[in-house]
Length: 207
Image (cartoon, rainbow, N blue to C red):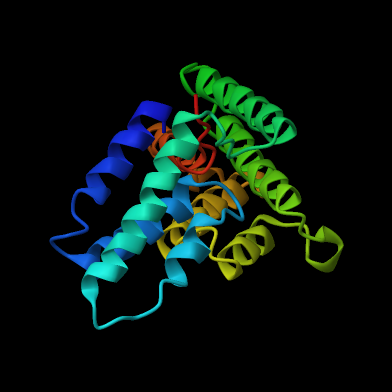
């Protein structure tokens, strides 16, 4: 999400504080979890707003945190990804572009791009865990293990897990020679679109 879009969305949530405190607090928490960067201080600040019978006090606290986030973004201080991670994501994106080229070539069996898409997704998840300083020596180096680890830390949703499991199944069919399960080019195109959307969702940078 671009800088202007972040500010616009934060201000939109901010405008709803007075009408529905608890609903807005929930929206603000999820928004900041997704867009304020790893280990940000804004979500803990919201969670620590003390309960008060004086709702105006709680609203004032929430407004102050959201306004601080807007100022933080406006001042160009928000960087969601390390430079190394951005380079890794760009590399994986290049692999997906290659997969798309193969997929559009009718002389190439869909199994080839399916394997490349699956490998790209696995690399994306592995790099993500490394960026989170996860000790990969303690888990099996596989798409399934990476997915479980990310879910354990609430970095991806239950729906993401279902999607990754489906994409992983397609990759495994391709890798193990079950070509009859990956002969549908449209199915692999949907896989490519899904992985691209997933990566964009979790590799947002602010500019």
